[in-house]
Image (tube, rainbow over all chains, first blue to last red; front, side, top):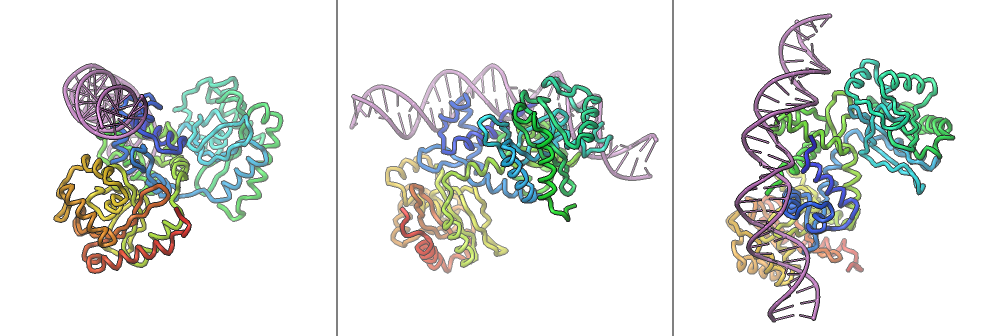
Length: 246
Length: 246
DNA sequence: GCCAAACGTACATATATGTGAATTTATCTG
DNA sequence: CAGATAAATTCACATATATGTACGTTTGGC
């Protein structure tokens, strides 16, 4: 069950991140198609808790810096080493595609750092974006770091659906693709989950964290050069990763 | 009306900001005394939206860096000029008390930047903290920047309550205190709202934003030296504020 | 390797909550 | 400056939602 008002808080936050300016109750209510009265209650709650304020008289609401304070406190724990962000910046610059760091979350894979392509046609991903772990290059690069038992446990929770033509729709199909990936030296996906989207990924264990790096973009651009992209990723990781790292 | 599940999202976020480590469903449910089933729904919602993930197998939930991404986007708009944070850092260091920047929000005043005292007994305030605008030194320093008409409009919404012995409980009392503040050259408060708490504040208009600076601490420490603190604030502002500023 | 205890998940139902209509308050216009 | 218009707020009621209960799953102890 989805908790509506919890989701609404996030929607409001995303709204302000886009709008980048204060918004009145009416504007927010209209934007989301919410009743004014409900919007009033929500905004009042967020204000009361110190997360929204009215910077100018009658100038509407805006988030307080409290979000930033909290987000910083939370993100200071186990921050990604700086070379990891440098890695995807460089990969994105070199390939012209979107490069990301991905972490596991149950049966899903979550983007935890993203550098977007600058191309007009590009893979649009954001931090927090989620994709099925078994139906994506980056996800399978995570699965490669699991033991067989761990994978088996996961498989039981996965609901196999045919997202695209090449989606693996059985445990055996996933395991086969994992074996191929090992042989190939990297993971790849061609529209497994999102149409027209292709990507190359490799595992990126950091400390005891199981992460992966992925470069993804439209199939017609990535397709011809997957293996080049994959080896670029591998070489760049080799170069940037501190030699002493665990 | 307070929207419970909206507030709960914030509580969870604050919980993680304190805990600074992943927490399982059970831990979170127990911490707040929430039913497991409700907690499950909430966590599922936050996960689905990409704000929570499970970094390790069976290692519990933790916020994704998405919070940070959004908070940054939001806070990049009209950031406080760097000298403003330097101002309160210096004031806190010099006085040993908590120094803050405060903004108006309806009948309340909100802390938008805080440097906390290092003293064992200190004023504990955080960004997002709210106090009644009429019953605080910093709030009245905001009111001084309002026109009489604007103040009158505000007064109608204020619910005058006797928070402490010196709380102004009428429009006339507030106006009188504002006159005193002008004569004195700064605003002060002795337990107007919080017991044993005293502070000195002055207006700090920045661009078209009406802000104020306040130094606050326990009455026994601040009391004897309010006017010294106030003039220190004024001098420091004069020194740090760019001369060309609007 | 088994058992027990803890944890995570699904679902029907009572209830807290979101909503539409009405009221008050503020802003715009001529 | 008054009348009109739009926004913000309040409140009672129907309904969507949080929860108690029950079930399945995982883990750690022996």
